[in-house]
Each structure stands twice: as C-alpha cells, then as structure tokens.
Image 1 (cartoon, helix red, strand yellow):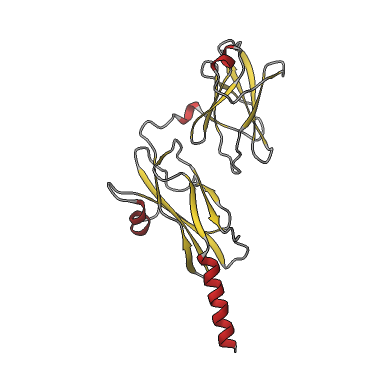
Image 2: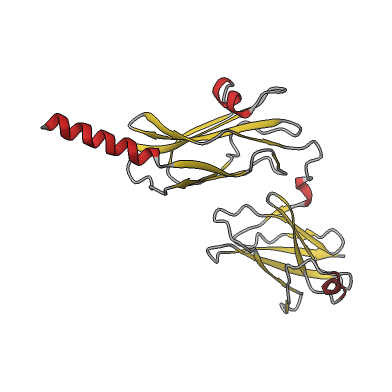
Length: 241
C-alpha cells in the first residue's frame, strides 16, 4: 500500500511539473541591449511559486563564441554568472560579476531545481551588447534621495539611467523648475507638444531614458522625479545652460 501511495505521489509530482514552462522575457532572443548590467527576467506558465528551500531557480549566463548558438553555449562554456537559490522571476546582472563587454554575444538560461534535480528549463536566449553602446557618463543613475549634486543637462535633455526592479506598463515622471513649480509632463512623442514646451519622456534603449524639456526651456535648475510601479520616488537635479 505504501509503495502504491509513493508511486501515485511521484506521478502527481511529475505531472504537476510537466505542466510548467519557464519563459524568458527580457532580454528577448537576439536583443541588442545598451547596458552592462541588464535586468534578466523570466516567467512561469502554470505559476506554481517556489515556497520552500528544496526548490529554486538557477540562472546561467555565458559569453558565446563566434557562430555558437545559445543552447550549446550555456551547456559547454564556462559561466560568467551562475546563481542558485533564486526564488523571484528576475535578477539584475551583478556589478561584482565579470564585466560584460561591448561587441560580444551572450547566452542565458533558467532552470528549476527541486531536491537537487532539474525538473524544468527554459530555452536558451542570446543577446548582444553593441560596440556603439550609449556612453554611461551622459546618463545619470536615478537616486532614491537627492545626493546634493546638480548634473549637466545635454541641451534641454535630462538624461538618466533607471533600473526598475518592478516593471511598470508606463514610467511616470514629473519635472519641477527652480521655483519648485511643476511642469506638466507627457510621454507622447508629439512634435506639437514640443513646441508647447511640454516635457516628453523618451525610452532610448534598455534602462536609458531622456526627458526633453522643449526648445523654449529656460536656463536654470530642474528637478526630475521618476515613480516606479510600487510608487517609490527617485530624483535627480539638472542644470540647463
């Protein structure tokens, strides 16, 4: 009887995990990304959450050789990053991991481990960091609290880098002038709005953004506030010459 019960449990366990399917979300296969520390995100069809220390996700990321596909790369190459015991569906490529390089192709994959056995895995995806990667010196990282610095705008553009742990469908922002008066923002890329001097948010690539104040923006100090999906605020101050 005990043997039958064990077999039934094993069958049910195998069936449950067979319904799962790990899907890589970002970067998508073949993506070109413009950061050395990308957010790597995946999802699980069937959505059976990891809720104990016997099961977890493992991520593997490798540099691909010339003409090598991602599937063989993650299987054969020495990992630049391999992390176990992940319970969430995303991770930022660590700043203390080997630095990714412009012009290189990378492969990555997620597997699910239960009781030290791989029970599910995603496809292996590839992404590339281009040689003409955006100069990070022009894009300032958003801060939870103002660090007291005033950063240089590029013309009337407020450039920033924002890595969002919880992805929102729409990035919200506000701009304030020297008198702490809010300037109405608009995420639509409308030339008519630019003539009206309405700030416009543009997604440049990966984690890089620009807020265009408009041609009529006056010289002075501007404060930019960005709000993430959990309504947490980040800010930077810029000087427009």
